[in-house]
Amino acid sequence: MFATGVENSVPTINGGRTRVDEMASCHHYERWQEDFALVQDMGIGYLRYGPPIHTTWLGVDRYDWEFADRTFAELKRLNIVPIVDLCHFGVPDWLGNFQNRAFADLFGGYARAFAERFPWVQLYTPVNEMYICATFSARYGWWNEQLSSDAGFVTALKHIVRANVEAMRAILEIRPDAIFIQSESSEYFHAEVPAAIRPAELMNSQRFLSLDLNYGRRVDSEMYEYLLDNGMTREEYHFFLDNRLKQHCIMGNDYYITNEHRVDVNGLTRPSGEIFGYSEITRQYHNRYRLPVMHTETNLVQGPLGTEAVDWLWKQWANVLRVRNDGVPVVGFTWYSLTDQTDWDSALREQRGNVNPLGLYDLDRKLRPVGEAYKRLIAQWRDVLPTQSMCLTVPVVAPDEEGGRHAAAQQAAARRMIRTPASGPAIQEN
Image (cartoon, rainbow, N blue to C red; front, top):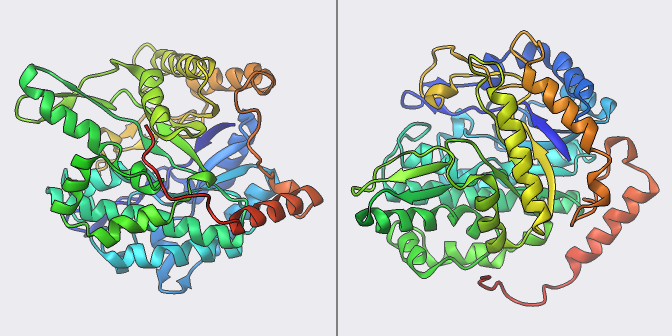
């Protein structure tokens, strides 16, 4: 599955007073038809995409589907398969931020309403980058609640992951063959000096928390104490063990040059650049969860040479082929995003209007060199990989197949599987 995305990040900054809307700053609201045509022209069949949550979800059981109706109708017409981002780094103003438990309680209702309105949609990322969202919002103090504490981080994390699980449960009731692709940042923390080994080990355990909880995996004992010491109750923890939906999931992992970190003696971090790389870190995550893998995000700035992003694309693709040839069932690859982005040089903490040349196209919708390279890569590899893959096909029903006999049979089989009791409780997988 070759993919790209239209970013729908909407965190708040300045104490919740300012909304950062990437769809607005990248002019997608005005140029969405053109953007979808570009996806089709690239030969890309999968698009990470979702409605802007802050203008769509207006309150409990209150929605404005006007923009979603138009955009998803066009995706269906073009036969582009959406991987639907329902929550990307922010919540509507009426919910406040991720410290609010109501988000976890109500998000499943929003997901159900979307699935009922667009029953032909099969692939979802209910909450994007759960670990990063909790970290930037409640540990680094950058977005939304802008807290900097372990208690704030654990509160945000448990609400975000529970919301994701509730959304999966709700969607499966409408679309029993739904597939959930957890786009999550794949991180690693390197100790700079011997005295930094301990804090680096803690961070390397915490990086797994979002997926451990989401997949119903018992966390390591030290992380269990950490969660309970910072506000998670036993009942909240057991919710995750008791709602294990791993069998419906693909582990999507994102890798950027900023995903590896150096840790100093005081536990402070700074970017290390690429040390292990995508292949080694992906093996770590796959060994832990044993799920099919999709590479769900990467990019690099097009620098002064004009070749920097192209070189990064080929390096990431070589890493994907490496882990695939080592036996990891890799089912997809993504350059993120379709167009350039804005203000990611400050991690969306400031609204300066800085254009970050990261896209397949610039904001004038002119093809960048990395776009040309990605188009060639797709054309060259699309027909080769299915004959060699460890995981031959993902059972995706294309939009133009919805309502057909195959789609109906697949959903009936999925419904029977869901009704079959689980064979046993969640276990810790090594």
